[in-house]
Image (cartoon, rainbow, N blue to C red; front, side, top):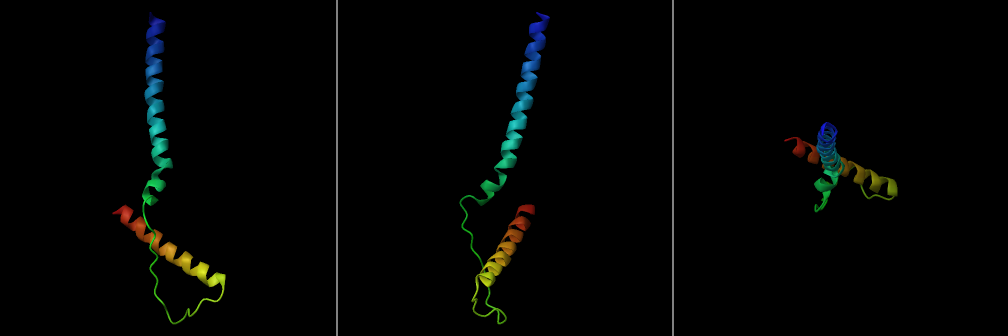
Length: 81
């Protein structure tokens, strides 16, 4: 009887700890996905006199990287509030 009681307590403890660990891991893994799902990314840009017409892929990729950084910074500030 004592063995059955000890095994039952051990099983219940492992079950609840495992469930809490699994839910925590699932929440952390899918946290970023839920933040991005269903959102359209709108890139705001201003035409400055220094850039001109982009002729190479480097300029286009640099513009996209800069605008993405601005967008992600804005999103992280909103998340902190």
